[in-house]
Image 1 (tube, rainbow, N blue to C red):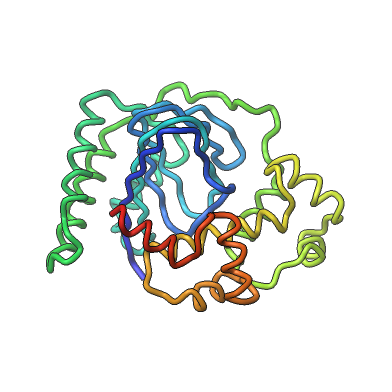
Image 2 (image 1 turned 45 degrees about the vertical axis):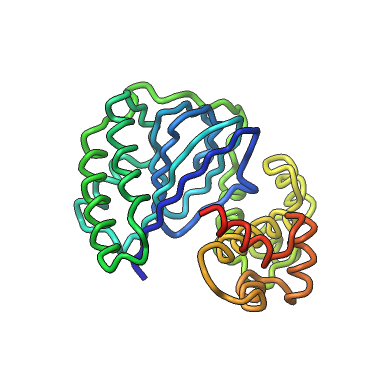
Length: 264
């Protein structure tokens, strides 16, 4: 299914993604202001706004740091025409620093997109037109000539990247430590050690964080029942999902949905 999603987030304190994650779509990450630590593929960067990063499908990434404002445009591969896909691929995995004029051009475009009601019968056509113009703007900006060096001497090992990507792609399945050990030909002790070293949590805790992250996204963007979301996110039961969710988020899944929708 072809889709495009546009999201704005402003945080006034230290904040980070719950986990290293990947997804099936392209992510256009526009850091309007602030400084973030960015893990992109197996490299760690410092990202300072205003800047852009194009993250292609299946690339593991994460951001964390202090106060910031950012905009995300998530777009599926089948939404793109050949020119749009080519432009995103050419700019992918590079830090693109923006001057004030470029920043303002993208902000004006995003403000127009935010101002279009989803109840507008021409919503899809208008968003598509704005996105097409945004790609044209993107085509005209150049990645930084000198890309920032990695902040970390310890790049993520290829096996870890494969495991992280697998967990982000198969989170709904019944996954155990024994299963991961057998599938990726790695001992359980080494698996646990590497997860602690690179993600600061166990493999199962990481999987739980992925499932909760996916569940939160479904609660915000869909009208699916809590029972269905718990099942589609790999939880053994709706009761267990509700218990874990409330322990982590301090509110029930339905209360979380209500609070998030009141913000929009």
